[in-house]
View 1: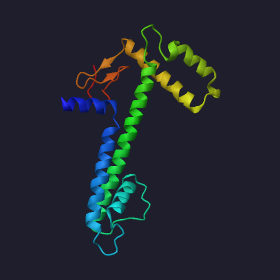
View 2: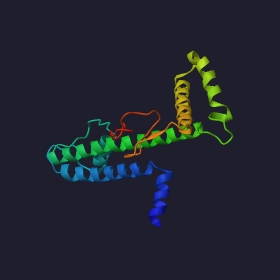
View 3: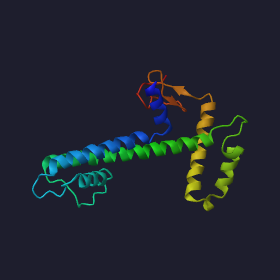
View 4: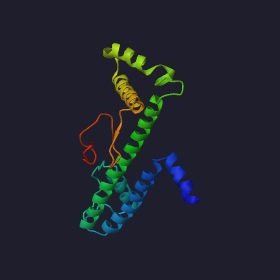
Length: 188
């Protein structure tokens, strides 16, 4: 029961998991570097506040430089915090990008009334109008046009009977290739 509820929360708010991971890394990384550094002669991380500030600055890869570990173990902890910071940042950006792409694809999916595209207009007509005025399109409108064209093409190809499926890996191709692009099996 509890894992099902947790799964639903993580599905609804996917940024929660990387945020929790980053918080744990900041907490444990700060404590670890404090324990290693605070007694070292010449150390500049001498209290927990400085250690947590160092962990936050390090995990975000900002690294102001006012606090830094001097011991070998402290530097190893620093490397781990840096790499995990890059990893969590990439996770968060990936999640946000994926959600935005899914939202855009959902707007371009075929509707039940036979129209493809945005606001109930025919996608082909909309694309033609945008192409006629292509020199006036902003960068965002141009990217949306490309996305609309790709979505329309995929929708039309999926509706066509010209699908070729690899018998080994089930990779789908819209034109008949000699070999599967995924596993290399010769398609006969």
